[in-house]
Image 1 (cartoon, rainbow, N blue to C red):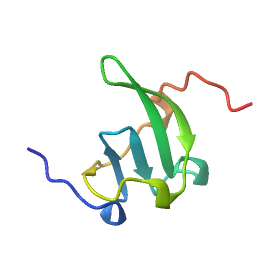
Image 2: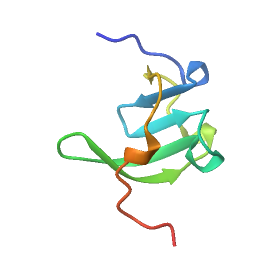
Image 3: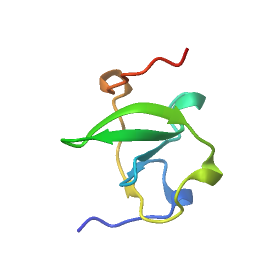
Image 4: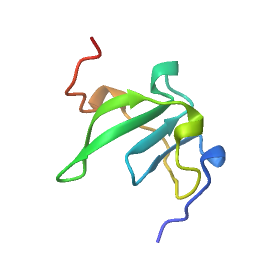
Length: 76
């Protein structure tokens, strides 16, 4: 099983409840909450503040490819 981390230890990573941290991304994409569809498809990201993130249970990643993210809802 993969090692989990606290939110403060993550530069790029995800939480199984649908959260992502990417401190290398633009400010609107640093801390996001996603809807997870069947097949583990992540969509409809919403910016959130760091304090609303789960503090434990994070998985580290090398990076996210924001160009391939499935964004199905406009921010209008």
